[in-house]
Length: 172
Length: 75
Picture: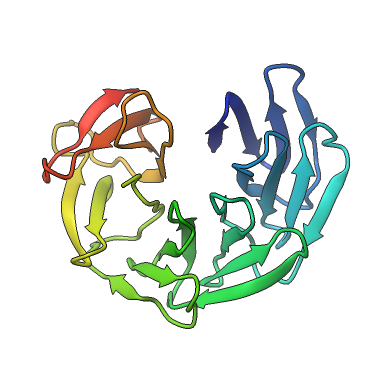
């Protein structure tokens, strides 16, 4: 998987976390299992987060990648997708347990749990104003949520004929 | 159905685009693993990227007035 943001590339492969910057490449093994998700804080040119099959989310500063800023625990299974909200104040994860969670990256606490998928949740993304979240999964559903009322989806699209691996909001 | 890119209209809650990437290809499978909106692209509007089984990252544009196809920008 490759993420692109502000002329910066980050990639992961089989448990290694690689930071491919304009300048030096740094590689280490911060997680106990494969790194399955990575995302950059859109409000910062330094902060990013990684999610792993070891059930944890780790927060990092690219200028000091040897030191993990925070480890977020509390997931029953691995992290398959991570995305920051556009304002950088929330972090959104998707997990094969079928639950997507909204996290406060400062406290490391989950502020909402989005439960609607009956099978694995593959991906979750914020809308540009952070008021909506889209989630998708192996149950072929795409669920749309109001982040202010996360107890149930605003609506569910069930028109897909196969699993939905990824979703995001278009710019308009 | 592998390799399908869909656009859902939030207002109607229905698909407005169902684009099968296999239709114009000789391949039998092209699972789309990632779909990501791109902010600040030189082409304004609904620019997004998809990455799939065909080992390519493709940048596409969706024009809501052209409901049934995407504009290919680069790969």
